[in-house]
Amino acid sequence: AEKMIVHIANALVEKGFSVDLVLAKAEGVFLDRVSTKVNVIDLNAPRVLFSLPGLVRYLKKNRPIVLISTLTHSNIVALWAKWFACVNTRVVIKHDSVSSGSSALWDYLVKYFYPYADAIVAVSKGVARYLAQVTGLPLERFHIIYNPVLDTEDTMGSTESFKHPWLLDKDIPVILAVGRLVKEKDFKTLIKAFAEFRKKQEARLIILGEGKMRGELEALIKEMNIQEYVDLPGFVRDPLAYMKYASVFVSTSLSEGFGNVIVEALASGTPVIATNCEGGPTEILENGKYGLLVSVGDVIGLCNALKKVLNDNELRRNMRILGKKRAMDFTVSRIIEDYIELISLVSLNGR
Image (cartoon, rainbow, N blue to C red; front, side, top):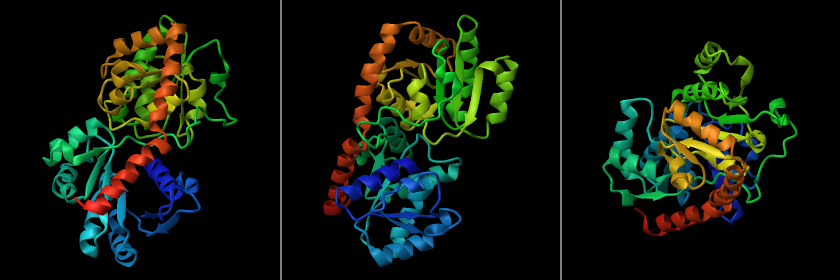
């Protein structure tokens, strides 16, 4: 979410907009990617909720035409801030998951406050359907704008000098996954499918990311006696270097609002296998046109999909060609036009 907002801010300022990037706290791994033309405003709050007074003061002082926010807690605070500031700023909220948060309280806040937004952006049709169900608003109320994943149209793989040693060995295929080590990503299914696949064919598995399930995943890897063939390097800021050299990219999410890493894998020319879950992956892959889809939690189905991709050179070649073409639908230069159109709409007409 943070990376997408940086892309949007940078692209808008290049289009001639005056852009303030208002942060609860000016920190994070993507901060150095913010354009020098963007005015960064640090509210210096320990948490997003505590940034409310500072955001109210900012709105009263600067009175921007449009305020774009993302993530559920930030969206709620943005809506509250407009009300307390008594300004005519149009609030555009961006929702990027098929859930609102970790408790019933967030569902209530979304249901009660989201309808007060001047525009609601859903990052996929799946997210729009979820929001319509929670809020009771008609589907037509939501603007479906996919994430601007690629910051230039020639982003076809990183030139990062470091490469994982397994990726330098062309004789053994490498299966790659990227995501937080949490239940929603369902890496347990991937590990089990990989263990099954290795019974018949040599391969290695790399999972990039960090999270609270690291211990459970490491225990499962040990239980299945595949420690030599699985690596969990942790968080990597730029996974494109890994994607470019991987044999296949796999997403096993239980649900996914959009699926930025799937787009990055397509752009890198890496064949993609993803679960046919609620949210963006099915839309990105257009029901299997640009990658293979398997059922959620289907160990044998995923194992068979790996066999199909890794043993069919012509299929991999076609997937690379089609994938790179599809990725161009998610460049910043393409998606920012949708945001500019929406900004114009809410500026002129309001809700």
